[in-house]
Image 1 (cartoon, rainbow, N blue to C red):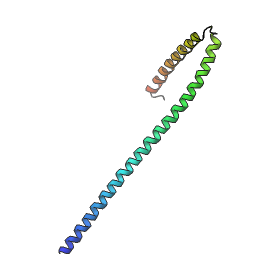
Image 2 (image 1 turned 45 degrees about the vertical axis):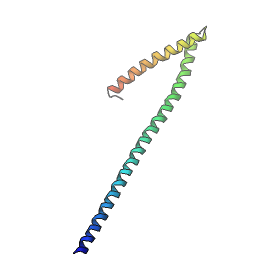
Image 3 (image 1 turned 180 degrees about the horizontal axis):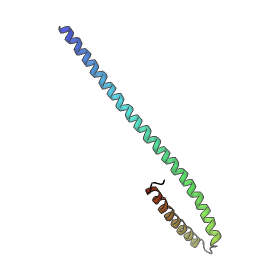
Image 4 (image 1 turned 90 degrees about the vertical axis):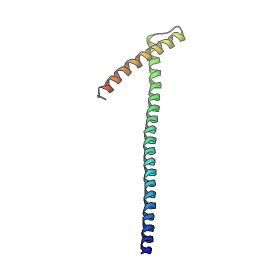
Length: 107
């Protein structure tokens, strides 16, 4: 009878240890999955931001050329202010319309 109880205690202890190990493995796997998902999302955001920067620099050159053609500036400083004001106004207007599209759910 004592041998049976001792055997049951060993089996119960083994089940408990196995359960703890499985629980740890599940926790570690969940953390790895969370990290992988966050890494992927941040990496994609970084790539999209880099592409946006390249597009913005291209538009910067195009806008500068257009303003130079429209407003032949006598002073380089005045030309830079034309560019800065034009780009700012365009950015505000475009941002306004894009945010309206986004909030209306049409995006």
